[in-house]
Image (spheres, rainbow, N blue to C red):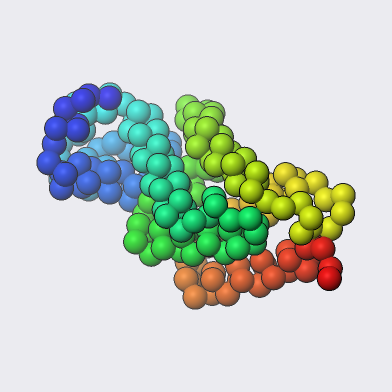
Amino acid sequence: MNEKFFSLPEERRQAILSAGYRVFSQNSYKHSPMSEIAAEAGISKSLLFHYFHNKKELYLYLWDECARMTIEVLTQYGCYEQGDLFESMERGVRAKMEIIRQYPDMANFTIKAFYEKDPEISAAVQESYHKYFNFKADKARVNLDPEQFVPGLDIPQMYREMYWASEGYLWEMVQRGDVDMERMEKDFTRLIKFWKSIYLRKG
């Protein structure tokens, strides 16, 4: 990546990033041409290639920006500081809803990128994901009191299953183009209530 990108005015940098999120969130990696991103950003394709040497470099930069911002918002919402897993999850839902409200193209891009199968970028996305999110998740689990759960529960496995279900739900909504914020919040509330009934120690 050309360091001159960072010397651009903030407004111009954001225009390029927003164009990338918009185009990549609407298409697969393969079917997202740099020419379309450049047109969205209001610059020439050659200038876009001046800042980012190729499409993969731009895509992974956008992914890293998503990851950084998501971790930042989740941290602001106190998601990694709770001793109660379900309180942490509820805060996480509120944080992600806020990200979707404020940055819909970025949120859609994040979900599509996680499930992107193109071999040119899929391995790099997964490696980055594990670097950013698994570290934070491991730190969050350290704060959990195992006594609050049913005896013998595999807590890391439970954590993974709940995460996969949550991400799968978001993926389905994005694929259907059915991002109804009120409905999503209600669905997540019911889902968390269901998990509590299964995993929390009775009494």
